[in-house]
Image (cartoon, rainbow, N blue to C red; front, side, top):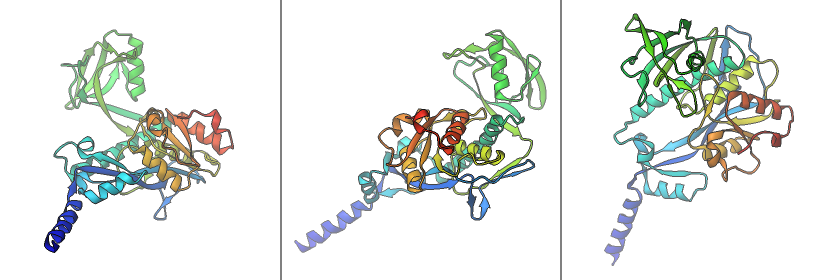
Amino acid sequence: MAVSGGLAVVLSAAAILLPSPYVLEAPGPTFNTIGEVDGEPLIRIDGAESFTPEGELDLTTVFVRGGPNGQVNVFDTFRAWVDPDDDVIPEQLVYPEGTTSSEVQEQNAVAMTSSQESAIAAALTHEDIDYTQELFVVGLGPDSAADGLLQDGDVLRAIEGQEIDTIAALRNALNDADGAAVDLSVVRDGTPTEVSVTPKESPEGDFQLGVLLGSTFDFPFDVMIQLDDVGGPSAGMMFALGIVDNLTEGNLTGGRHFAGTGTIDSEGAVGPIGGIAQKLVGARSAGAEFFLAPADNCDEVIGNIPDGLTVVRVQTLDDAVEAVETLGDGGDAAALASC
């Protein structure tokens, strides 16, 4: 009996320590985008007048364990299941089979870099500061109007003779054509080429080429964002807010403590992110009074708001700036959109 009991204890302990096919998400640290990291400003602007704002505009993070970065064991998984602040997610829903740790790190780094560039563009758009954007084709959508006409790597230079310097300029020209064929000037493998494409109307009523676009930017001054060991695109909106506050005299926050999350594109549209329940907890734990949440995440926000935290729903950078200014001036949160 003693031997059997000892064997049972050993087997139970071994079972608890077995790898678990789950990913665990927990609240991560926050970083003040108008503050400092290791004694240096998180955001620094060179070549343009900038200011030193007060208050806090925290980007929020999620601490992720499991998957390609190292499997968790059964004990850790059960502990996360009983913790109301953690989420337990099947690994295959987070990472495609065969994904390696280096691939995850590379994808996160690329997403972070792209997010920062889009945040700078969005902030400059909000401040009415001109910049140029070069668009290039990175793929064709299903049933694309440009199938057989545009190729991966094509750089879009002009539409109907008008320079394409932002994605908004391209979109406006396509809608102005109202479904008629448009002449595009592109550079393909270094050679200027002319292409005629008849756009297709989307369910939303916009006319589109049906291509996936990448972009590079040429900004009139340098914006440096210093933040290591954080990846992914979800800090975009808070980066943009921090840049706007640095470019604006006075304190956007009124000295109050804000946090938030959300992707952003160069035109200032805010997109949904993952792990928002954990980010709400992390924000409140760091002392935030207000949280800016993407409108498309509202279903996950409801029922997960910590006591003492007020959540404001935003769809654009303009919404976010307005919310921070209103609350920073002591305005009524009830007058703002919420989840």
